[in-house]
Length: 164
Picture 1 (cartoon, rainbow, N blue to C red):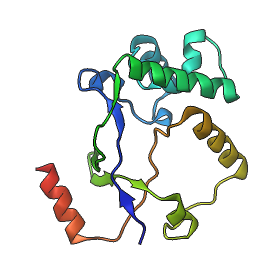
Picture 2 (picture 1 turned 90 degrees about the vertical axis):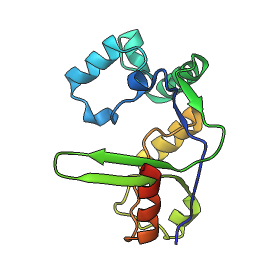
Picture 3 (picture 1 turned 90 degrees about the horizontal axis):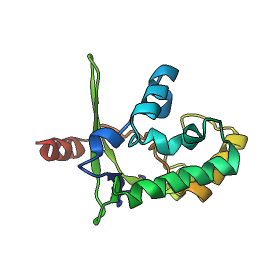
Picture 4 (picture 1 turned 135 degrees about the vertical axis):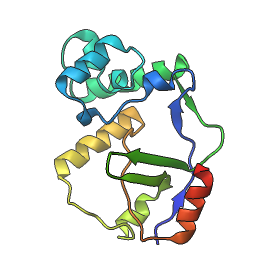
């Protein structure tokens, strides 16, 4: 069974959370994205889209360096903070028909390489190299990887207790 562990998250400070937190980048229409970038200087999208400030598209290592710099600026300005203690995080997503609840945690690449975590798709080697370069330069991944697990009454009870 794969191991999950608590980790020290970097998250929006309580004072800025409503302005910093954003949906996944691809969930925005072009119009919504433009609006967020134009009217909300605290949006996490400002970090992920640093070329907006310069009115042109920036790619490759130049873009990755600017993403890293914007991330550090957000930390320096106290829009983002690092937790002092490792923790698990409860994540809940609701739509009109369903409610999905899960745990955000750290897991081991080793468990993935040893097939303790089942792969649901093959990835393109070119994208893997690009992502490797991104992580090396930027130093963070803002979009967690989704893992599932078999129904477990103990886990469900723990999540319910924490949510209360």
